Image (cartoon, rainbow, N blue to C red; front, side):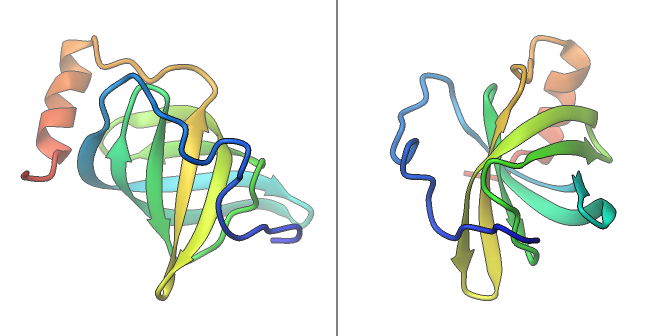
Length: 120
């Protein structure tokens, strides 16, 4: 992906989030429009909050790009901006900020969240 920046997006590094982050483990499909057409990769979601998620993936994502998120558990999760992409061993950690808050108020979504939570 051209224009990839590694490391944290320093404008938002260390920003505290007021909402709870949930430690989770589920697969997410990340799609975006590239110069070559539609691109899609699989990633593992490791934490989830109302405002975003942290992914682990084998493929780097360009900081500030906008991606579409789908999961087998939650279905279409919406769009998000890539805030950072950091290399970690043989993979990448990617921080995403949702375009609109991801609500857990729906009882069905709450039940799904309970299923994908990692034990403490």
